[in-house]
Image (cartoon, rainbow, N blue to C red; front, side, top):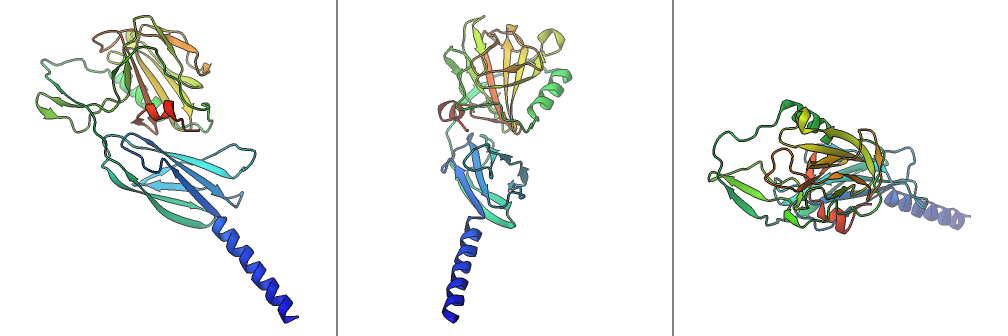
Length: 285
């Protein structure tokens, strides 16, 4: 009898230990991110009534359910990085299932092209109208996820300006500046397509105060991820339209503060401009 209770006790203890170990599982990718990368934090919970919280560098990031048939208790949070971050260890605190894990990932440095610009005169100043509307758009965090798989290239033109370029203005390094997107030197009137599914949440026109951005489209891809397209010659969608990946939304132009026909595509995660290239090459499902 004692042996029977002992065996039951050991078995129950092992089951309890196994459940405790599996209660909160976290996977961070990429494992060796560099400046500009988007960090994905995948969380697997045991308690269906528990919701994870993620904190990093003083900011709390929302975790959204990952819809899978095999595991309905998976969540994911996206953490943006940019050239303005300092390389080194990024602490990530994940809480759920009544426990907390203090993790970290090492953010690698990255060399960005530097330009030296001489500015004479006052230049072109953005209107408060466009600044307010663009800021509101970039801050969107909707619970729905509209994208699926890797993002598409929004225009077939060559890349004329890469993401992350830093600048000196009149010999002074601009600490808070980096090129917040990718420029495509497409021909005027060439097609601009949606790189991924989403909902059009912003339409801005040069004639209505978008003096710097020019004709603009903003697409909400969901869960804090948005795309913005600038300097368009034509806009083919309306605010509220749901668009699919590959759908034409407008055409390349040179409206706003532009020296020639090109498309500027900016990809933002929680309001931070991240490098769109990994989203195209690898994708964040």
